[in-house]
Image 1 (cartoon, rainbow, N blue to C red):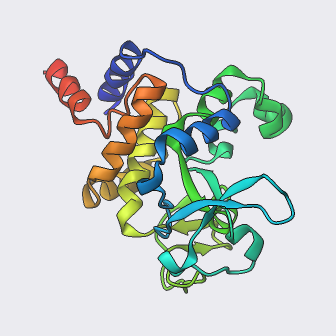
Image 2 (image 1 turned 180 degrees about the vertical axis):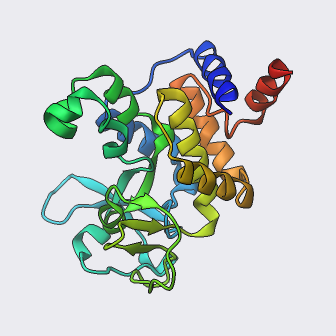
Length: 244
């Protein structure tokens, strides 16, 4: 596995023709305008369609907002945050940065000038639209399976165990999450625990790449200039041929 990860990193780097967005802020703007087009505006968790809406009491300003009736999502506690779409890091910023020296010196704010952290924080493969309250409740919790946890967000199949600090997403996005973690580990040298590796390998098998996941990845590839080799089959095939 280590050999394949290293080989894929070389393939990804050699195919680069463009730069990653320069900041988390610019990445969010690009995703909103160029990746999540009108027919693809569906939140990662819950599958809520979302649209651009005027911000109350702020003339001329808009925000992305979920359409609750499209997915049955309901606020658990924070109605204001539940009424907007936010850009979630599948691999949390804490997990990206806590091993870096800048994080030890000043947390996320302290890493904002670190080139490596900026690349990781703004990598669009790791950013997905999420109902704001779910983004907040997930926090930097690890993904996993939760036994018997009650649903707290209406019909949305997303569960959080706040005591154990675990979030359980619906089955249809578990493979997407796994392939995002594998990509971030491969590209940035991020370490996965044995438990994470085993869980994500299972999730990737149970939830293979869908047409929507592939289309999103190809849009991002055209902008960032490199592929996620765990989604794009041509890169995986090239890696397999070179390894033989």
